[in-house]
Length: 368
Image 1 (cartoon, rainbow, N blue to C red):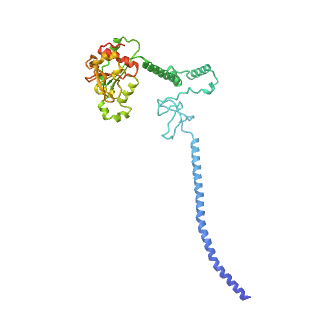
Image 2 (image 1 turned 135 degrees about the horizontal axis):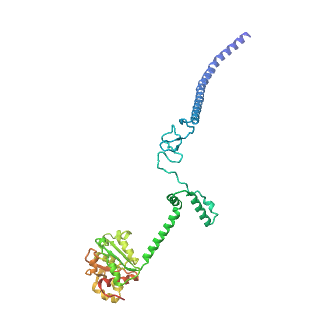
Image 3 (image 1 turned 180 degrees about the vertical axis):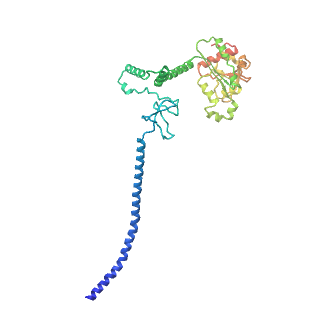
């Protein structure tokens, strides 16, 4: 028995000697892991407590500062009267520079000339007036205006009236002005046309003399309302057209397209131009061939003055009347010597007025 017990004791002691180092290693490892975690937790708690203490201290300081009274040199009121302006101002001790000090009257100390804001005249609710008749609303607004402007000077009343009613006054004025302008424009364009003409290729459009218009009216005894439709300053060159025909045909902003569109609308009764302008008008069918356009009697009387130009097919035909030697052409001051009259002739008025002009220029009776 003693031998067996001895063996078992030796076995136990050997096993204990084997287990103990492993347990110590685990405990040591666990202790090493627990120490940083505990320290971190304790540091966080201490930092949180410090922040709370700082906030509490700041709060107490702010509370004491708010409850403390500013020095008033023996006066009991917190408001101090300014010696420079004589106005009551709110005490601004230790106030940051960026803030403005506003007096009780609402005047900014940095802007001594500023005025308090005007009291709004829109205080009345339009919803309250929805159930009223037009007469009642007018009376309510009048009463409100009188109440808000009571005690004001005439200038202040005018200012408030303009602020409140400016759009009610300006809007009708703008509408009436627009309607008057529109009506005047329509009336001016609807007046009978005494003569419509375009002067092409003038060397200086500013010096072209159109003073003949008054004499023209007196010569034919035209009375009542009338108008002259005139255009001076279009440059039409046949040779330029041949060289740049693709550009001229595709562009809507050139003098060529303007002339064509105006003549198609019947705006001009006659075209006054030099040779290159009439060439273009004949080649583009803007000017009418005189044979067939004029009556037989008018054609016979004007035949000595006729000039031929090529039509779109290259055939020579009479397209214009030569007025180069007339006093009218000289006084017109177009800047070129060869002056011709061509006829776009789209509407009946064009034909009548063109014969009238030739009668005035050449002195030939073309009455039909």
